[in-house]
Amino acid sequence: MNIRFLRISCLLLLLLSGIGRGFGQESSVLEILNSTSLEGTRGMERLLGEVEMKHQSSLIFCDSAHFYRAENRARLFGNVRIQDIEDPITTTSAYAEYDGNTKVAKLRRNVVFTNQETTLYTDYLDYNRESNIATYFNKGRVVDSTNVLTSERGIYEVNIERITFRQDVVLVNPDYTMKTNDLIYLTIPKTAETKGLTNIISKAGYKLDAQKGSFYDTQQKQFRFFEGIVETEESRVKAEELFYDEEKAYYEGKEDVRVLNKERQVEVFGERGQYWEDRKYSLVHGNALVRKYFESDTLFMAADTLISHDSEADTAKYLLAFHSIKLTKTDLAGIADSLVYNYSDSSIRLFQDPVMWNQKSQISADSMVFFIANEELDRVYMKDKAFAIMTDTLLNHNQMKGRTMTGYFKEGQIETLDIDGNGESLYFALEADTLTQGINRILSANIKLTFQEGAIRKANFGIRPDGQFTPVQKIDEKISRLEGFQWRIEEKPDRTSIDAWRKPIEIDPDQENLFNEPDVRLEMPTEEQIQKKLGKPVLNPAKKKLIPDSGKVDF
Image: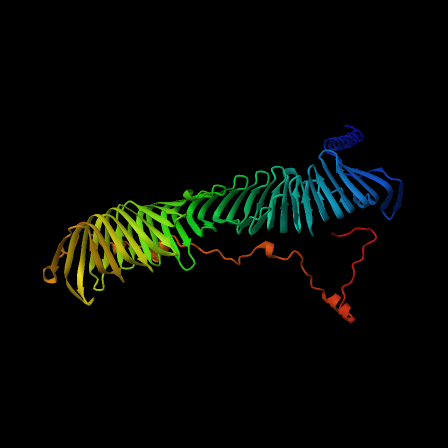
């Protein structure tokens, strides 16, 4: 074979392969499309007036440019505009550097990056056209049709319409303002996700705080907070995971839920809860707990499930509790299967085997209702199988039973007890409160007993009472007990048993809030500035870095 022919064939193959690559790939060379004048010196071409360049699918406009053809890059000056032909992205600035090899544009001063309805304003932006990612630093502001977001640093991933904001992030919406330090915003669904501490103040004055981040749909106005608190003028809701729908004024919490009604001074706790703010209706279950705050005391109540309703109508202001009820206050304690607390008259109704203890007394019935006045037990009404037991100074058990009973209290102790229907009374006769003489047992349709420091001092009976006295020598267990007697003091709840059921972790009133941080930060002067102000020579002044003739600037 002819050696010359072989060499020509190889050369043609190489040439054809190069042409194939040229057609298969878009050119990465910066092209000059227009310029009023062109000057060349030291490997740099100066383009002056109405400069227009092209790189792949981007058109580049500016007042003047330094074009480094060998390095495939340019410095752009004055009214810089980079416009994407294929995507609706336009970037403007006062100055920029564009590298055709890396496809990175470094824009500086008055930078505006626009993508359809989303616009980014900053002074320092690096835009990678290869990955379609814009990165800003030293403050930036993003504006769309709904929100304005600002931060110290940010990354705009155009392909997935995601912007990541970091450090001193502020989101302003027509209805609220949010502050955090780490936020991810999706521009198409307009959702915001934060990491760490997040604080919000709504236009209506609501405060929404999250210690462990949040998720917010800005169009649907739905929040999800982690270790979050929502506080209004009338209420405060907290949970480890808290969902809030602003349009429906609806809350839903999971884990360590707590709902405070500020007007009623009632706080409800549980594992899961729902709250409808307009209806002032809440449902809480899972080791539920109620705290009713008084000026000098607090009523605690534990239950499986709690329902609270505080509407405008007085008759509809109540708290319902179901199953395994335990309640305690300084001067009383009680148990029952279910309970109704009426806010309007401060009455508490207990159902299904309720038992109440008040200092030296125990009362029980099929159902009962007691009333609190001036933060103390005022009176109690017991219906069906009513049974009262009071201990005297010698720890004897004085007993009363009947169809219904009404007890009246003074300074936390029972003062009088009215028994109506099938009344029976058994009380120990004492001598000087130190010696038992015997037992008085009386049957009467109606009985009224008066007490002093828990001991019976006076008894009034209805028509023709049937009484019997048993001396101390003949007293045995049968004689000393009325039928149905049960001293259930071991079931009496106290703070220890309540805390074992649920012990709330108190909210720290001084926890960090970004709205408490000053918006203006004072910067300390440098040592050089201090010395210059004092008129002293600066030791070891830093040498200014000279820009090489090539005109390349490091950013």
